[in-house]
Image 1 (cartoon, rainbow, N blue to C red):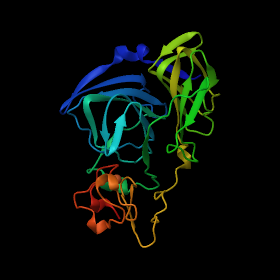
Image 2 (cartoon, rainbow, N blue to C red; image 1 turned 90 degrees about the vertical axis):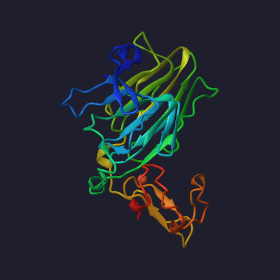
Image 3 (tube, helix red, strand yellow; image 1 turned 120 degrees about the vertical axis):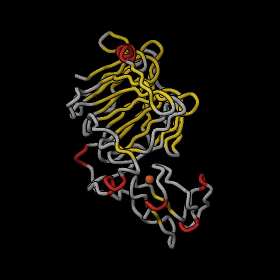
Image 4 (tube, rainbow, N blue to C red; image 1 turned 30 degrees about the horizontal axis):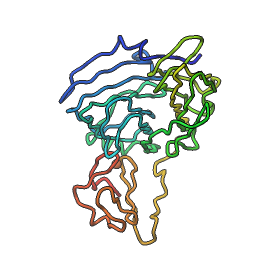
Length: 303
Ligand SMILES: [Fe+2]
């Protein structure tokens, strides 16, 4: 049976703790027991401006959805309702909330064993065999003329089951969610409007968790319609080894440099105009204080 948790059901458990430079709130939507590392985990994290969450990684694949405020993560811009996906052992950050603070849903197919922070964990990370570091941030595209619009994400998708979809349902419309078959489980997140299920109304934010062997979930929108994200985790058994991007420059003669921590690629032929590095900028001419856009590590970690 799919599990459903609406914010209204869980908000009584919202707890606050002090963190360097500010405070953080945590609201658990679906929390496995402390010693259970097989069940899915879903929670809302809210962090105040003034706090910087350092670059770190987890040993489990993860989706994050911005639901309030905003900020940056590395050089990834975070705005409502951006979706960030990171494969296991992919460092990301630092997370810096803007003045409106930042709130994000974190989703994992099973409970994590805790964050590992860089640079302390650099060597441990590089010596992890079989990892396939990769991350992306993408804005969902909602809307459309039809009663039901389904828009697949263009970047967050792969042939190992990874996929993400933005669904928009007009008032009262119904459909079935994308199939969870061939994935490592699925989360459905109602980001706007209301989900009607078994006669009960679940307002945004509502999170539904569907296992890979369960039928596609029936969706029915309430009187105000519904916007929903369907997020499919990749099969863990399908994870191949590192260097998941072809290390060939877009132009002959130019070299590519890859971050050995997060797998980000710098292509000399393309440069990085957003960082003031025009196409053709050779690695020697990239400033010494330039940092990886994904994990903020320095040039010395590129090879
Ligand atoms: Fe990196």
